[in-house]
Length: 518
Ligand SMILES: Cc1ncc(COP(=O)(O)O)c(C=O)c1O
View 1 (cartoon, rainbow, N blue to C red):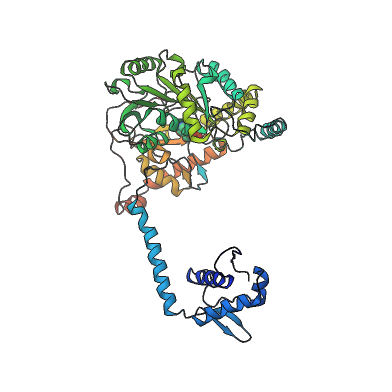
View 2 (cartoon, rainbow, N blue to C red):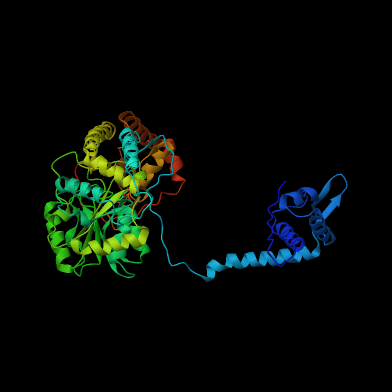
């Protein structure tokens, strides 16, 4: 066995003393356990490039102090009974360890936060988890071809620092995309490439927030935003949503440092912010000096009607910061999104990005730029939009078939719907638990990566169903099983068992807000 020893030939300490000290430390630190054989003196001398005598003298001293024992035919090994001295030394070592453990209680880290639940750790056979693209949809062939081609032309671009705002070709391609698609006409200089919406949210918070500042936010809201602002110790001011999106009349009269909003497909309820409310919202932002952070995470999937222009496209005062992502349309593992800022924020945003990470990896940006500019992205979107529309229709049909005239919201756009449970059905938390027992994942607001601040009309009776990652067969079986779970729960034996178990925890609800029609 080789033991990890390194001797310093230039040290003023003798080689023998160094060897003694290092073996002793290995024993006291527990790396050489009692009974562990040590290499023969000749072998260790060869390993270390020292004379055999040096090793023998060190072994002799360690034996004399009780750390080592030697037996004929067995050789030298670590003593089973360590001497009293060693125990004292061990005590000292454990006291030092206790100091290390004690350190965190004396020194607080500045960061406090909780992570958003975007990763699903459950392994259910039929999982209607939200915001997950079809696992087979990644354009792997095109990507492989583009990576190979891009690498050939990389030059120094992989070895040099680049513009922290991102590759100009990609920013141009994004500007060309969001012009017609979202009605946003911007200069590529206003675009910063980021690692998904989440980094964009962080950058905007860095630009606009300090501890104690107020943030107006939808209720319920996307956890990734709510928990982020919380970690900045901002004062969160939840504002209810209804079937026309954010209730603009409930916004604080005095304004806020920023407002976070998901106008295309409210997360999680799926409502679309009406044009009339968009205009009133922009007016409020302008009057109160509030920046609006518009998270447009899944607007590439619009199935019905023409899209309402993004808030940023309607804004003439420079109040809106827009966030887009390729996490939903291509894949979350890619970690590419973009922040579009008003002209006056372009400089500070670029600096904040530079300070954060010096810019996004070049290769992915270059490949994505080609994919967008060459028309690959449009073709890809057309294909998956069609397939998601079929899955969504299948889901709506299955719900109708098993549960009658159901009320759903959010079906015009995106990758999930909200199912508003009628009084004849169990509440959302109960339904989620019953479905899970039948191998199906369906989600309440809070468990579906949303933050329910309480006082929300949808807390108890909204179930979130993501449809994009399940094929139609899986959708059908999943909903069949949910129906079977509900039927089983209506059986007298189940009801009797339930009488003896505590009710599932549900959040407070405020009645009176209308539910959306399908
Ligand atoms: C509303 C909303 N915004 C942003 C994101 C995350 O986007 P990204 O992966 O780009 O950080 C999600 C993810 O589910 C989301 O639901």
